[in-house]
Length: 95
Image (cartoon, rainbow, N blue to C red; front, side):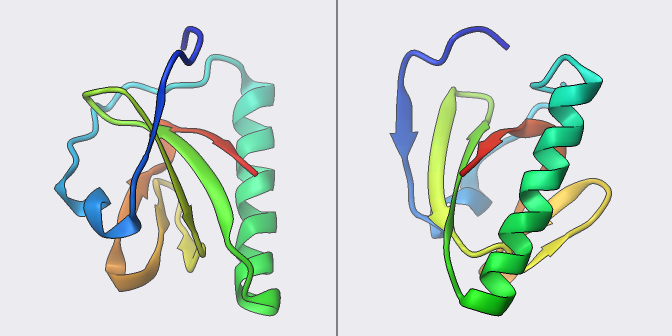
């Protein structure tokens, strides 16, 4: 994915109204591996420390950012509170 010009901050409740393309946003195996490692760390921080992480992701309209707690990770998605889901392949970064 190219450079990120503008990142719109949204609330997690808005995510269920977004539409996600199927294309992967990361282009190397290493960046995908790093993303998964950071998601696992975010999951631990949320479950053990009750800390939120910042997730930058892309929907069909552009790049968005949400600050939230990760409740679960599957092989295809990240699960947030209230069964809100972000497809794994649409996540750009986690901090």
